[in-house]
Length: 267
Image (tube, rainbow, N blue to C red; front, side):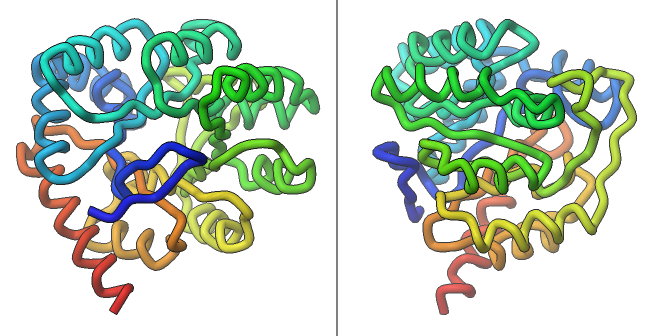
């Protein structure tokens, strides 16, 4: 599989997402619980091994103790997937969870998208800036995520010293009051949001990881993945999570769709 570089961190162009591992379905609390019950540590490690077999070299995951422990077990058993970490406001402040990621073996760390959206709404970006400084002092590539396109416009104007962006295709919930989405909070997945983010990505100066391309399972992969591929630049990657209870072959199918679309784009 093709690779891209996030700073000095080389990863497969298709990266594995992990929201389902942690019970973040974005489909309601019942679906959250279903994912939590399904994804035991053993099943998570099984998906990681499958991803390796498919040529995927990196997984994006929260900097929380469950994720860190699961990855540690996987690495101790000889697993080779790398971890690209996101800070985790549900666990603690940005500096605390960035340090957890650094100490836990992450190869790159980015600031949580909800944190970026929330800080932008509050007009105070000191928290993510301090997190970026900590990550870079540790010698790791630093990035930011966001659901609101204005996050990346701000980063470009300020020439923020980051190595990559994670751009959500959907700005699916208001983050003005809280960096994390509440379990009962209404979400929306609008086509105009997807179009707005894709249009912006073409002008960004950093490599982009395209995420939430499936609208948290609402989009047909046969449409959503080729759409994302058309929006991707040579320096970009895509992040997709899977729920193997619904379809044990979901990851392999998504990879096949992606690789066919990418090969077609390259001609």
